[in-house]
Length: 87
Image (tube, rainbow, N blue to C red):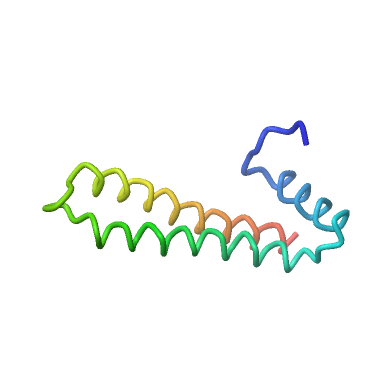
């Protein structure tokens, strides 16, 4: 697409037009991104349960950091979509 990803509303608008061009309803595209973030969060939580701070502190620290990022992504995505849909 030759674009740089941002958190600007224009990027969300671009996603809307891409989903339209691909004959994918915007709500379906939104659910896809939401589900992808939630799946990633679930996956990293499973890894954290296996790699405890006591058994594998390095992996635990790394995955905990990634999990926090994924949770922030989900929050940001939900907030941006709320703002976008309110316009």
